Image: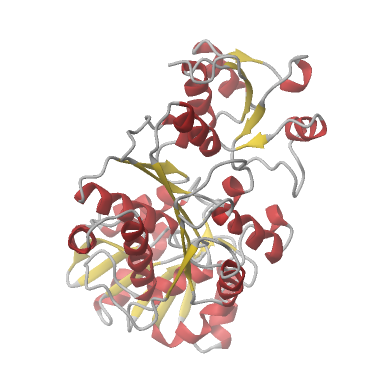
Length: 429
């Protein structure tokens, strides 16, 4: 398939999104030059027959620079190749944009569903894809969750792409229009990349860019920044649906808590906007298996339930899991976000005892001490889990690992952090 014949692209950053994007662009007939700052990544690309070199030194004119989402093109400091591209007037795009261009170039009228928000994106993306599968609709899901967007196959006219969109991806779109889109919630995150909260909100708002009166915009109303965005959406042409999970519960085993009620409402709204029947939506919600590392019951020993919520990389996400349980032993800590665990103070009385780990564990301990909450800084998960097990066995029966932090001080990512907790919880470590 030569949908991009005659086009020339530079791909910088050859990780989970970049290398698949480079392969697909080549397969679609484009002329591709790739670059990564890591020599091993460059060698791996060369071994696949991809041309390797710095775009700025190639003397070539590119239709776009495809820059991996984690690499900055403006703040806090642009990557040199991105700075060069912008100075040359070369668009800096994410691969989801090129998926959209490829689908439209193929003649397919497949629709696009976009999901963003500070928390809940992955669950909502996976849930919507599950509902669409239940309804028998050809569906592919990816982007920030799962496969790289450009690696997804071309779908027929009745197909739907369900794309989880991070703020990093949303600020690199040019023509992609989401037929249905949701912004779940907004709390401070990635402010170094976007400058401030206003910049972060502006990036998230791009999920609704280019929507017209045939499109559906869905927005969560449970936080002030989202309500501000809703006011803006009311001035736009797309049909608007406002949702709230407050005081609601789905009854589905994998979707407990108000936050998951909002995720389910969002997925249901998007599915209805895509023409799915209420019966298929209800069946999809009840049968949804859930996602790993998101308030996931991973073990039960001697009456103690171990909940893996490693995906809670900020306090707002941790609050969602903590709000589900009346009483629990809490394991938390790592690299905290701005504000630490201050916003969790209303939930402190639910904590039977906290076992704290990682770089900011001592800071969290000091805050809990000030609130009179029993806690102990034990440094590592390997020490925290058996201690929490012993405490929960004599008390609440719940060990909740919801760290409210990034993992990078002790683990490469939240997935490996959650996997370690799971192994310890099962007594397999």
